Image 1 (cartoon, rainbow, N blue to C red):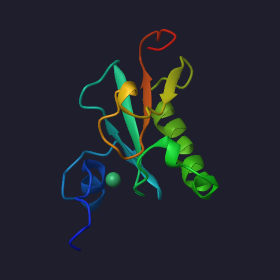
Image 2 (tube, helix red, strand yellow; image 1 turned 135 degrees about the horizontal axis):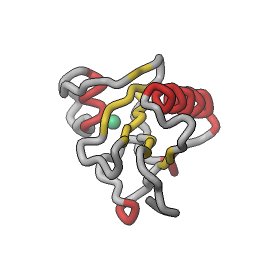
Image 3 (tube, rainbow, N blue to C red; image 1 turned 90 degrees about the vertical axis):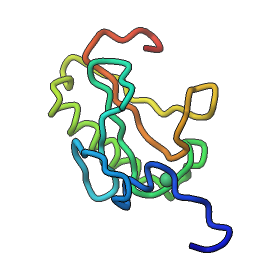
Length: 118
Ligand SMILES: [Zn+2]
């Protein structure tokens, strides 16, 4: 590793296989795991293989990656049985949003009625 290279983040270590993480689903740009601290009966994280710190670091060059992440979200929502009942997709950005791992990830939350910000 280069002298000034930052340590890989937790999700990058999952991508490399250094940290084992059971994958609910995956495609060629992202994979899905269950949140270890679920806020609802169903709480999944859609994580791109590419390291992008937060949603505010996204640009037009990430368009196809984002589309694939949303396709994967739809696939797992269908597989987990919430495609008809409804669910929430959310990106947390920064400390006030409770972001703890600075590697872009899309939350899929469902399985119960969700409040306005549930
Ligand atoms: Zn990362």
